[in-house]
Image (cartoon, rainbow, N blue to C red; front, side, top):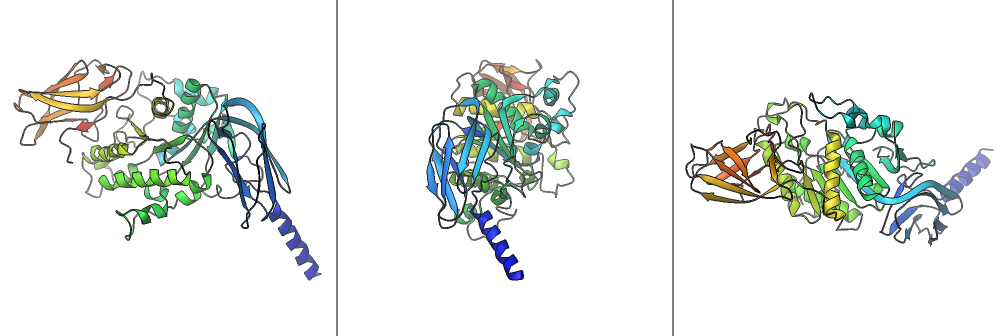
Length: 470
């Protein structure tokens, strides 16, 4: 009896293993990336024939000796008409309500994880526009789809294929606010379905999001121990998503590394992260857009071990900015989005999502009208006046109509003092009576700085220093 029971159980186990199984990221309600080859993959019994049907396409393959299989759908046109995707082997799986459009992966720490539920309860200054606080009450865009990564579940198959949801109701309440508002802006501007995957962990440093082999192969880190649990989140929360076709990546992280007073090494770690993610998708051209950290009093935090000064945050932002040397990257400025300097979570997540979308619209989708933050371009000095020129697509303005703030100036002695500054076209003239022969200018060079110099399009000028060490 026992032998018969064991044989029966083995037979059932073998039959179960013979079934076609899909990764969790392939499911009902998903969005497939348009205009690119789309991978559909999974596991089955070794040698099992597998066929995939989507529209007129019907690619076929056979599972390899390890039971893995993959087919490629030819590039698809955008479609908001729900369709079925069928996978047939010894069993048949039908995924319903599948759309075709734009797909992005959003990751980082708590400011990316920051949910729509939290966003709806944000406390704003008197007179602020509160429209976005009510987004949960009215969100109903069947063409926006969301997938929230669960660290413990992503690598496990889901027989119900229910990981994707329409962006509304309870699913949206628990989803990333920056990622959702990014998707909303893209959908409105592009007029195609948008799918966004959120894979973020509060309090996480950058190291756990990087593939271990990336550190091992990099001369700067090879052969030495890297703090921060390399690959702890990459393996369960990023790698299983590949090769799901997508357009690019969004990244909102850095606070945990800034608390370590990290600067230049963070630049290299971000480069490795971008490199390892692009390698996982076998596409070195995938765009990578990220968020420059908002004002916060790191130096006054209980986590300050004596290494953080009021210049640590500006220097960390500089390290973030240095990553822009990597092709197909972009950064948004958030100096105006903090309401309390002792709260590391700026409430304006809808604006962060919108600004990330502006980057994508300009750089990925080539929409010429998408504005960008003005960036320091050149310094020239005549007499006692330093003239700062910017790259800007719109005129410079004082956002509140008051004199410009957060400019400092120094002479050859390197001592920076507060300066007067005024706009002249696309330039700002900076001077101080105490500095008759200026040689350097700094702008927003303090952790608490919230400058009022903006473009007329409503975007803050990126902080800078002209005396940056090379």
